[in-house]
Length: 363
Ligand SMILES: Cc1cc2nc3c(=O)[nH]c(=O)nc-3n(C[C@H](O)[C@H](O)[C@H](O)COP(=O)(O)O)c2cc1C
Image 1 (cartoon, rainbow, N blue to C red):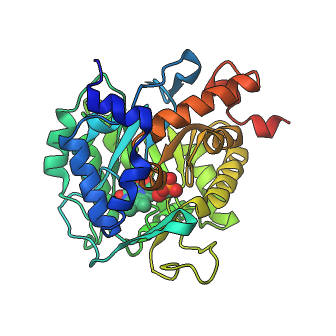
Image 2: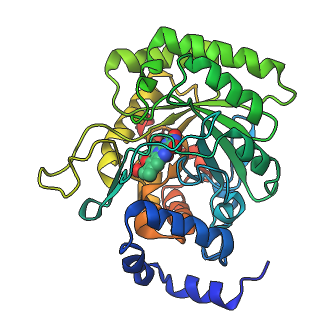
């Protein structure tokens, strides 16, 4: 498909630095809605897709054109799957979706920390529910890239596991993989599901549900960066015992590795973006060691460029996801990261992403 004039112009100049001050006139959530609307109805502005055999990789039996994905939370309702993939991403993870629609927390609930290139959010799984989500997932384009469905629980559901079972049954047929999200800090009690016995129970039940599904997608588990050693060891053991297909590391942090005076720094919620890079990468490297490199890992948190993505890969990530950097860097991000990553891989003599996974542990 040939890019039209507007698309070519945008890519050549990467106009986002010009557009960004306009978008930043709106509060963060409204700007996000505008971005989603722009993707849905506007031209594709991501520029020329970076394609190279060295970027292609297979994880959990799925063939990814490149290792850079859009993280969950950007496309909560599975409304812009095609447009996001056309920005050059190898995959996109849509959701978190809950069985019933829910409004989430009162606004304002998303804040830009501009100097820190960070975001704090306490959205609380605002989403339109499984019904429409599943219908859109079913109609998605099949050839543009891999699509994961991220499932969660409604705030008012007492039996959390039943919500995950409902979610998995609904999306299994239409998603390439399914992520079990037990790590959002904005749903009361959710993160307790990361505790060893609860997690083991949850994953065992979900694997039983998957067995009964006509199509059986790989199951990924998304964890928080705020876990003590006991919790991390418990997750590693459960991951190995249950044979979970991948771990996504990590969600946002409730910690605040920020200067004290940071505007919005004291808002309640999960912090993402640059300040979470070091913490999430340290947890990633630790989980790679605890799982002996046997469980594929997906690195998320503070990735802004090729060097950040490469650092996650060397720390143990087979794939990398981004969200906050989209706010600050705009639609050319995925192609830029892939181009830079390619150069870095070649510089160090790696012929593929897979060759570089966990390289830091072999020094
Ligand atoms: C506004 C916002 C909403 C998010 N919503 C979700 C969500 O619904 N489900 C989820 O698993 N992660 C969610 N995340 C977390 C991201 O997927 C990602 O794990 C985290 O932001 C760290 O990556 P980043 O530093 O590249 O943003 C959200 C993040 C942000 C900033």
